[in-house]
Image (cartoon, rainbow, N blue to C red):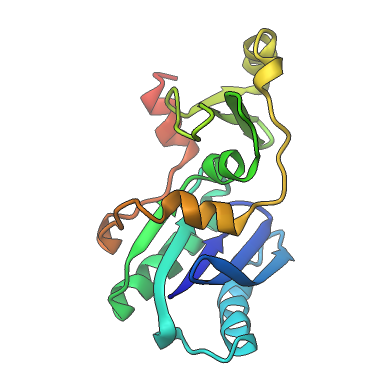
Length: 193
């Protein structure tokens, strides 16, 4: 079973191809504002490099944010379109979850992703389940927030596609029409900011 992984939430675009949960190839490309130009050729390259076509794909995993507004929309739109037109399952994972799942720890984990104005924060238990809702804190709010939580803060690591696949393999796919990006504004609204 071929799984295509798409992550465009950040400047680092990651496209992965797995066969039965094992990574065949992972392509990464730094992009300041060229996601729309780079993503489809990267998908095309990874398929060609592994001698398959888009019709051989069996499922798609897409990072649906939070992150770059445009970047997230590009990845989600491509993933939804492929899943719908190929009639294959699609699963989503947040940008914070990909790091929680990739980091080995027997402890709770505080994962953060920064932007210019603040940080997205997810607090996960040892089984990578979100303990609280995702939050977004402006830089000055974050300084106070993190004081008593530093021991749980984990450094971002390379994303581990096999861990992500195993984390999601028993989760139900989503109707492609219901796959939506997670935006900063949505997080602020949920947290009454």
